Image (tube, rainbow, N blue to C red; front, side, top):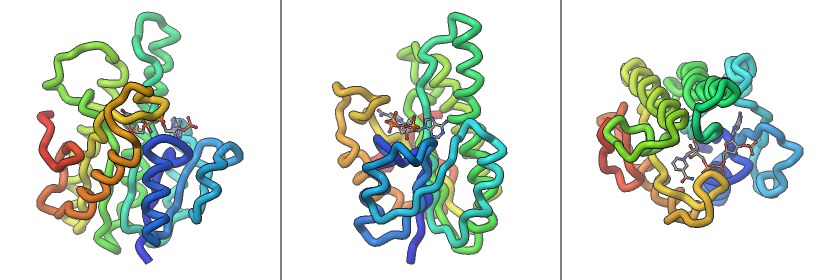
Length: 220
Ligand SMILES: NC(=O)c1ccc[n+]([C@@H]2O[C@H](COP(=O)([O-])OP(=O)(O)OC[C@H]3O[C@@H](n4cnc5c(N)ncnc54)[C@H](OP(=O)(O)O)[C@@H]3O)[C@@H](O)[C@H]2O)c1
């Protein structure tokens, strides 16, 4: 059976990934920061595991809980704080760098031996806002965290490639979730359906790429 590990699977895009992969018969390991408060996720035929991406010790230990792995969807992320005008916001930005950039990288690095055994795919859910070519401005902490994620994942892809592992960064588009807001363009179902199709088609030749959900490349 094909196995996928999805982080931040209790709501939004992560929950939709869990819904779609489990309904297609995949074995789904779904992580949530607070498993007690995940009724929608627990209603699915998935294995729920507690994981707070702000806890780097827990992230480092997590690989031991996973045997065979065909796909990692490193989805958990935060857009708090919006700005860094105060020291309190700067401290939340530091935590955001752990959750959005460092923890996904450490999780993927820990899982690399499992991934190499099966020729798995390692997918980071990033954002077009992490592109240095995007000059729309604002949301500086979030942009910086996703640009850092991209750099780390791209560098990991170079190492992973030699082991037959494909690693790519996908932008989901603007999606109606708590983060994206009600005015966003896409439903989680539309975004995840497109990303799943892309993940399925991804080849090792595309490893290290920063991609829109239609497979086109986003400038760094
Ligand atoms: N929605 C968009 O338009 C959009 C656009 C571009 C990129 N993205 C990216 O897509 C991914 C999913 O976002 P979304 O739109 O589904 O947002 P969301 O509805 O706000 O969901 C975010 C998920 O991340 C989890 N999370 C946050 N901090 C965490 C932590 N410290 N440890 C573990 N889990 C944590 C949340 O868990 P809790 O419930 O415990 O907080 C939740 O499951 C994120 O990486 C985001 O940056 C979204």
